[in-house]
Image (cartoon, rainbow, N blue to C red; front, side, top):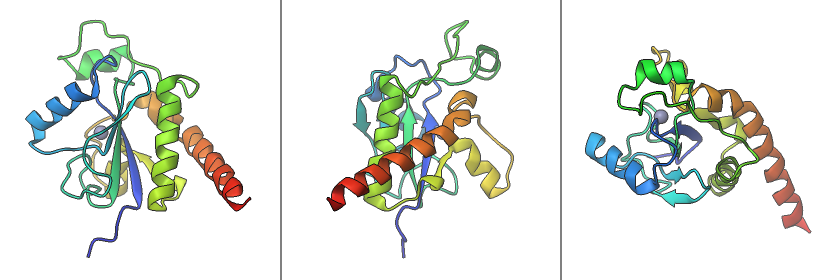
Length: 174
Ligand SMILES: [Zn+2]
């Protein structure tokens, strides 16, 4: 019996931040032949649907496809040096993206996580990065996804989501 979703896995598309959701979807489908993330967040903060939130026939993180909801940020949140070394398909000299929680894409990510936590009754402590799934499974890290910069921001993101959920609960009681 499927137990529902208990984890949210944050990803980056590992491509230029200017990619729109349709481009990201097309790339995923041609590579994996099935949808991956439930949501894709574009650079301007637009949240687009991809796989359904409860879909289990998805491929976004080994070991977490059944229990995890994938949320993907357009962009590549590693350093220029890492990108040059690991992603030969990227434009030469790509500087690496930086997510700012005050920017539209950062705000949209927090909003999206709040809604998903609330709707699926997931604790903010269960918001993890794709890279964390390898550690949790005890296997070698295959990817840096969602990029070192976003990964380092996850603690702050969980705190914001927690605070926002508390605010929503308080106002629902009024
Ligand atoms: Zn990923």
